[in-house]
Image (cartoon, rainbow, N blue to C red; front, side, top):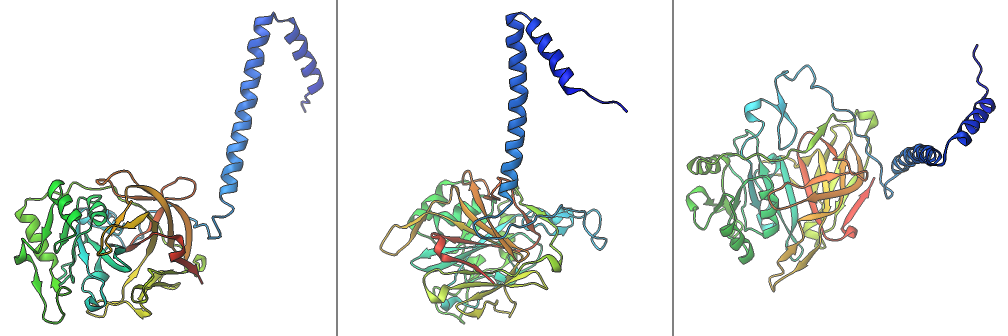
Length: 372
């Protein structure tokens, strides 16, 4: 057995050190200091990372499992669809996204096609009234989508992040001025009316509809080519025994627009309620989501119609919920042509469950509730 006499080694080091001339002593001291500094830096970094995993502002930390290969029921050549992470044939993984402005006035409910959207944004349009922008980039043939309403600048920015066809009926003066200047395809019922129709079942202006086939026909007429966009990252869903129980509420200040997302642990879905009632499509399909993202965005009222301006470019606080848990992070969107990404408190991009995501946009943190 070999033993080490540390005292003897240290004495030899001192003897060697004092035998050196002054310049070599300085060099040796600098080397020792550099080694000590490196050790301190590594220990400090490890400690900070450990501390970050203790808790996040009274919300649970979401354990993001390692992504694995698809199960045996999914063909090996399938890849994740860009819009929602669902495994699909490569030819259908990056279809041209269609972003549709959908009415949420009580006179517009129930909506059509909203439950089939792969991604939905909800934000205030004027006063406490919210509006949806639903993005469709799947292969489903939806015969009716709507009611369709007018454009707003911040929805345009979100649509531009996908290079989407932007579908609307008119818009605010600011939104229409933006659409005239930017390089993005849009279809406006005021000028391309043959791709839309008005229903007698609802009163104007809550009665304009379109279809996925009509919008695809318009894209073909334009010879539109999908430029692609940055997909989010995706993961496997947590096993049922590892799921949480958190429900989510969004109070947009008007009872008719009070949102509840009730988590169902067995299906691992969030079930949407609006104004105290289950939120369903016209055909009775329950609206649900695999992921809920809440983005806090600075906003202000800009005119007598209570339209809003929102600071949707840059970054801000974000909450993200899946598998029955919620955590706090940040959203970042560098410019209008870039899709926003969601990051955790360590600055790492969040991995979501594959499936529909709803993005709830709020101005104040007090609008959000997370509870069991």
